Image (cartoon, rainbow, N blue to C red):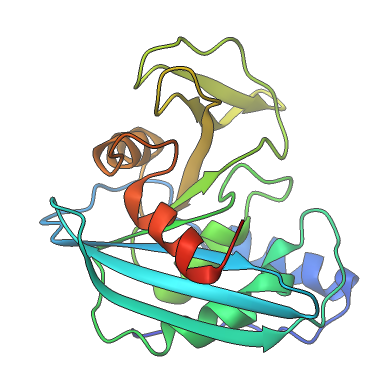
Length: 218
């Protein structure tokens, strides 16, 4: 997969925040992926002092795996809320560099625009990959939302400081919603549609669920 190297990873938390602030203006929050034939899922696991990253590329619409790639890097960046990219992205980048099939759409386990500085890991990776990217997180990072209906496809806007930054989306009746946000080069409405289109009876969209398993996440 072609990547753009936009910043160093061996930085201090203060430098990481400055990088996020600089890159946030580059995130594109509009667009609709066209002619999607493949969708990638990205996730990581942190077993001890390492970060294991997995990228699974699925054909679309059947969502069967056509490429599975993993990579591991030492865990060197401290846990700091809002700076997940600098902890996990080096391993993700290493995995993406091994991918031979260029996906038309990427779903990242994490937040994108729904981030205090509006550039979570899904947006950061989206800028590096320069392709449509969606953030699909399991928990809320910032902002608030109202009740979410119980049917698949029901959603409520996540708002922060008077701005809609994402959506709490019900992907399966009876389970907690996921938190969808723009990663890069896609609108929120399109991101919601694509997450639903990639769900196959589970809480997580299939490419992301497969990446979760490939990374060794529990």
